[in-house]
Length: 283
Image (cartoon, rainbow, N blue to C red; front, top):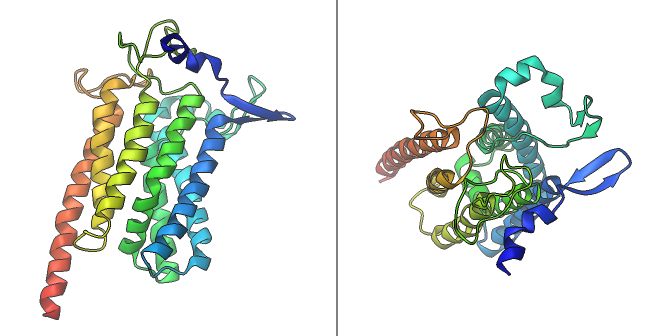
C-alpha cells in the first residue's frame, strides 16, 4: 500500500486526452470542474440562506470572475515569477501552443495571487454595473471559492507539478518531473487541496452567519488562506528560478501571503470603523 502511494504521481500522465493536436490537461479539467462546482454551491447557498442575489445573473457573475481570474493569474505569474524569461520570449507565455516543441501546453503558468487580484477587479466592475453590494458579493464568492481551490490543487497534483520539499516520511511521494525523481517529497499540492479547499470551506460555512458586517467573511477568507499558504509553503519546493528570499528564510509565495494577511488585517480595521460610523449615524 505504501509503495503504491509513493509511486502514484509517476503513474499519472498530465495529459488526460488528446483531440487532434490539442492536448487536454488534467489541470484544465479540474479548473473547469472547480468553476462549475463553485457555481452549484453558490446556487445552493443563495436558496438555503435566502440571499438577495438575482439567480439569473449568477452565471454572468461567475463567467466574469473566471475571465478576470484567468487573465490575472497569467499576468501575475509573468510579473511575479518569470518576467525576465517573458521578455525574452513573450509568445511562449501568452500562447497555449508551444511553437518550439510543437506541443499544446494549455493553461501553463498561473499565479493564485494574480488570479485573486484579477477576479476582484472584475468583480468590482460587475457589481458597479449591476448595482450590487460589492462586499456582500465578495462574501458569497468567499463562501464558494474553497471548492474551486480544492479542485485546482488536485489539478496541480495530476499535472505532476508543485511538488513538495524532500522528506523521509512514509507518506512522501516520487514525482517524475522533480529534479530528483527518485527522492521522496511532500505531496504539497494535496496538503493545499485539503486545507485550502476542505478545511477552509468548513470554516467559512460554519461562521458565515456570525459575521459582524458585510465583507467580514471575505476578510476572514483572505486571512485564513494567507495563513494556510504561508505555513504549507515550508513543505513546498520553491520555484527554481526564484528560490528562497530574505536570506533563504521565505519563498515568494510566503512573502505574498504575508502581505495578503497584513492587507486583510488593515481592511478589517477600516471596514469595522466604517460600519461603526454608519451605525452611529443611524442611532
